Length: 85
View (cartoon, rainbow, N blue to C red):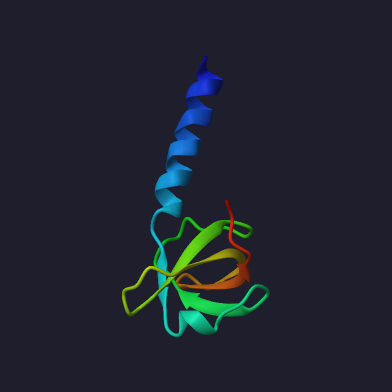
């Protein structure tokens, strides 16, 4: 029973974590395979984590990315990936 509770908590935390997109400039110019460095104060991102990028100018577009590496405490190097379902 404890294992199921742990799995459920991890899933809920993952969903909450993924719900906070990172704002970037010129989002429309990104395509799958591009790598960029973004600022993030969240220390919970690890290599391989999925995240969403949105433009600083509000709009409906969202780009999906994965963390390639952490750079210090406030930057992430991410690779744009094809839309995840």
